[in-house]
Every structure is written in structure tokens, then in C-alpha cells.
Length: 200
Ligand code: S6P
Ligand code: ZN
Image (cartoon, rainbow, N blue to C red):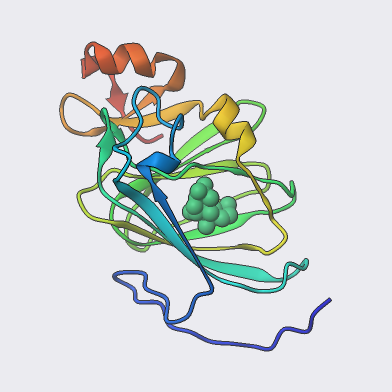
């Protein structure tokens, strides 16, 4: 166990820019093949990026993260993160929205799901056992600050194989709509008037 020294930094409350970070991950359309319901995003489009402060990977340590999801969509499905379960089933997470409009879509392996609306100042608690994906439904970057245990780990396989139960797409009325993943293909290709308004 490493004795970590205290440290400080600043986070710009508009842009999410961290004054110090050790990890920066970018996800372009080419990194998101197969994650969208009907069509992959343009391969050169920057879909999202995230920044992290590293701490030792020990129980009790907490990672600070800022994720920025850019505005855009792939055949009507809004730009979003890959989404994951925490590999450690005891690991939770807290999100704070700094800017933009979106949703945090969550689900369990037993089929429960939830979509929480995100806007400036909103926090969402992701309990242990809930997969989570953030979705930008606005026309400016969605900026999220998050805290999670350093030993959380990330399980992307369950999502890349099974997908999320629910997806958020732009309805024919131009507003975000929550659709069942099983129906997204037929709905997107046909008529979006049947979509219910998103958010539970
Ligand atoms: C980590 C936390 C976030 C995501 C980030 C990118 O537990 O939930 O920092 O890593 O938003 O999402 P993803 O699904 O590509 O890891
Ligand atoms: Zn997470």
C-alpha cells in the first residue's frame, strides 16, 4: 500500500479543463465500431475524450476524471461513451455535470435500467453493479466530473457484446427519445413518431 501525499488542482467549471492530469484518452468514430445501434459514427469524428488524475491502484484511493462528450450523432443516435460495468462489483461512482445537456443511462445484469437527465449542477450516483454510459443530447460539449474508486476496473466486454437495453436517439420532433435497443433499427429506418420522450 502506497502512502499517497495530498495534492490539489483546479477544474475549470465551464470547460472541465484540469490543471494537472496524467491520463488523456480520445475516442474517435473509428474507436466506436459496433457500439451504435444502426450506424458507426464518422471515423474521424472526435466523439469524446477524458482526463484523469492518477492515484495508486489501491482500495480506498479515488480517481478524479473529467469526460467531455462532443455534440453529434450517428444516424440519429447521439454521441455517447462506450459505457462499462466496473469489474469490481463493489465499486460505485459519482458524476457531477459541469456543462451541457445529456443523460446517464444505467442498467444492471438482471435487466433493471434507468436514464438520469444531466444538466449543469446535476449529480448522479451510480451504485455498485450498474453499467453506465453518458450521452450528449445538446448542441455543445457535455462536460462531466466523476469520482470513482481506483480499484474499480472497467468491463467493456459485457457492453460490446450485449449492448445497452436502451438508446437515446433524436426523435422526428427533434427531441431526445429513449428507445429499446431491440427496436432501434426498425425505428430509425422507418418512422420516429412512435418514440416516447426520453427520461424516466
Ligand atoms: C470511469 C468513469 C468515466 C469513464 C469515461 C469514459 O469509471 O465511468 O471516467 O471512463 O466517461 O467512458 P468509457 O465507458 O469509455 O470508459
Ligand atoms: Zn465508471
